Length: 78
Image (cartoon, rainbow, N blue to C red; front, side):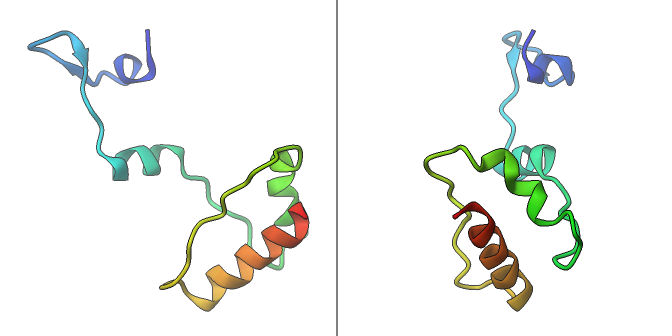
């Protein structure tokens, strides 16, 4: 049984998993980050250290805190 069925999101008419919209998918997989100055902030991203490509996102309209966090993540991974 897939994750949609486990969550009870079945399309009754077709017995198929209901499509979830992107905001729901993002919300379901989002994780709260520790504070930027917390000792475990950078450790949160160690699980990506062995990946060849990591896409931290685009931030043309982000806040200063987002830019600082992305820079800290990039420093940790490079």
